[in-house]
Each structure stands twice: as C-alpha cells, then as structure tokens.
Image 1 (tube, rainbow, N blue to C red):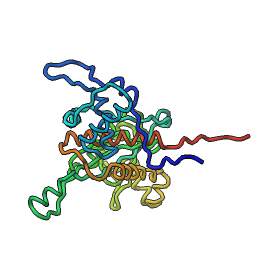
Image 2: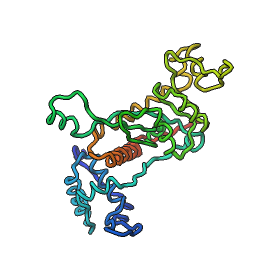
Image 3: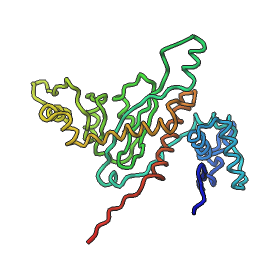
Length: 301
C-alpha cells in the first residue's frame, strides 16, 4: 500500500532565480534596486497562482526561504507593489518544432476581465449601477503547444482588429496561418497578413460581398476566396476544408485563464494590470509544459 498524499503541496524555486536574487544591473542616481526582476517575478507568480495579497506573499516567500535554510532577504509587500509596475516581463514560451520547420498556426482572440472592487465601490457610493468597468485581454495562442505567445491589455473600447498587428509583432517565430473570428474581418487585417505572407483564416460575414477594383474586376484576395467558397459550399464546409475548427483552442485558453486566476484583475493601476496578465500567461505556459503528455508515435514491423 502507498501512503496517502491528498492535499499535499510541493513548491520549488528555480536555482537560477535564487542565484540572481539581488539586483546586479546598471547603477543610477538615486535609490538603487536591491532585488532583481527575477526575484520580483517569482514572488508575483506565487501571489497570482495562490490568490494571495501582497502581505501574504511576503510571508509565504519568507517561510519558503527559511525552510530551505538560505540566507536571503525578502522584498516587502510595498516593494513588490512598486516594482510590479516597472517590471519588464517577457513571456516564457516553449517553441514548437512545427513552427520552426513550417511556420505556426496561431489563433487570436480577446476576452474581458472585470476590475477588482470597481463595481462594489460604485454601488456603495452611488447606489445600484448597471455599469461595470472592465479591461480587454488580447492574446495570440499556438494551438499545437497550447502556449500563449503574445498578450496585451487594453481598455474595453479598443477594437479587436486593431490589436492584431501589435500581437503578431510580439512573436519572433515564423507564422504560416492566423485564425480569428468574424470581428477581425477587416481590410486592414487582410492587408497586414498579406504583407507578411500569412494565410488568413477568418470567416466572412453573412452579408459579405467580394471586393472589386475600380474597373469592377474581382480582386485576387484571400477574403474573396473565402466569400466565394462560403457561397458555393457553405460556411461549415469552408471551416472543415481550411481547418478553421482549430481556432477553438483560443476559447480553451480564455477558459483556462479565467478558471485558474478568476475573472477579475487584482491590481488597481493600469501599469500593474498589464504586468499581472503577462505573469498569469507565463504561469499558464509553465503549467502546459509540466502537465501535457508527450505523445510518441511507435512504428512496428
């Protein structure tokens, strides 16, 4: 029989993070940083994964260092809050061999996150209100590795199609196809993807018509091909032939983000909120690396 380990937790800190715990960068006039970005990022990951406040994060990190019998100082809760806004955080991703050889299949989508405490404060001060403030999260997702390759946070009045170019500019890997929903059915989106020689998989709208030039001739355009195919074979057949159904992985990414970290942003300032969503995306990428099974094809003679 095996001893039960129900409700047991295992936490570990990366050795490279511990070795670079203190700040060793360029020294400037004024008060210098004491802790490195890796130290601050480590604390913020613990905070958002476990749903802790800044004071609780400080206490947990202090306990972990004490249990590891290491002589390291711990940043205070106020230092964590101030450094979060200035943290230059980059997404940690696992490159896919498919992307490196053929170019990746990237899916793009957006979702909304509520602001922490915004609705409750308005109700308390001004009575019942139907309006709630929220932010938009835009992300680019690799459907083969389940990795978030790019993420941005904007106000709720920013158009989805407007954020496609800033998202793809964050990705340094080659891209072969980009799949998005009907909100990205805009000429500027097609022009940008055609300029980068990326195949666009965007379903045309119900009343979509083909684009023509000044002489009335049908343009040789990706969107026109999709419009004609949908009229001839139907939207369902077009999705099947182009593999558009793989775009549903973006919905899975949004679901994982909200179920793991909740539907609210914990930070109050916009600068902190942008770092918050990037930290959460990095944590999801790390979860994918640890939990996804490695499938190996076995051939028998």
